[in-house]
Length: 269
Length: 302
Image (tube, rainbow over all chains, first blue to last red; front, side):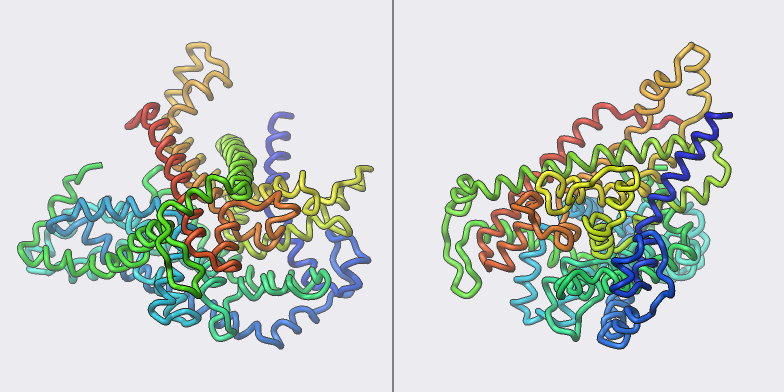
């Protein structure tokens, strides 16, 4: 009995610690500068103020949000389309060099992003794409080896008999992929989409390096810029944070099972 | 992993090969241009002296000689290793404990599981700033809570002794729950007969965990530690907003040094050499894990 109570107490503490920083973002975003100093951080402001959000949303933030949405949408679309085609080819089509090529992809999964940042910047500089949309998007637009690896695992898990009938009826690879495999792949594609949305939305280092003007500024870079201001405006920073976190939390609430499923996709279950 | 029967049945005639190449081409362009080519460039540039404004000059091993004597760079390596040691073991053990707790037929398990994963999706930049606020010596939540029990907390992020553990704690907070998902899935894949058999043989719960559960979780442990280590060695975002490498270089991790060398000092040749160093470190650590787990992993238990 007491053992059971301890178990639930430990879980409750863990859950509270997981959520507390989010709670703090919400509480602080609605405080004035004075309330920030006069109320304990874990208590809400009385009365709450929307001045911080109004200041950000009345300024350039809507533009940065739009930029981030555009980047996230483009990268997710690119990832889904190109990853699906490549993973299908690796899982189901026969062509010379298939296995060698696939293991080359797997090997590139070991290349740390931090190592490629400098050469990527130099490539974009050579192509004249620094501070452009193409420069921001291109490195991640054509599908990542990790995504291809996950989708290939998933396609290989589907019974081949599904396609046999269609093939006997004379359907080509494209038709088989679009008509038979894709409808069955919604859970896997959903997971891949969610992972891509989250990593694109949260990405910081590459946008920081490749963009400099407002035209392509994304929300992570804008929020990091709030810190450079005068004094310590945690109320303003947390308002910016709230704007960045709301879409992520919304995705989590509605698509939670896809995130849980990402574990299954790695083939470890 | 060799091609399984499902992979072999793709008999689509001659056109199949064409479709194969066609479907792979876009991603292959991406891999070649934005993953393989950059590795070659960074390797090549590490032998050049290039301050971006001037022309690159071949310098042979000059950058590597400079690296050998560069105390600040090795300090960064040391800080990075410390950071990795502070967060990866802790977040792995905590994740395992959470998974074991959740695996005990907990009521509302789905809700706890969801709440534990919430930190994983947080924007690192935002959470860096949020934890700045938590660690704030004046009015921050942590020292506020400590003062309630009569403890005066340190000036976390301005104290060279506490800044790195504080940043590491953010990483632990962010990744523990997501790691837990993998351990939980692994635990649920272990047939209960194995535990029952061990229990009948008189094994205590602790013995059962170390002799039965843990060895069977090796594939999960491998995946979790490899991905966590690779990620931790590249830590950047939270350092950037929380400490800027300070105080007095105590959080100056290698990826932050690479960034500053390239994009503040514009010393792209030497920054490439530092990148190669990070690459080699990550490669060696990963291969060591492959060997370690390769010897100890039992497959196919169902």
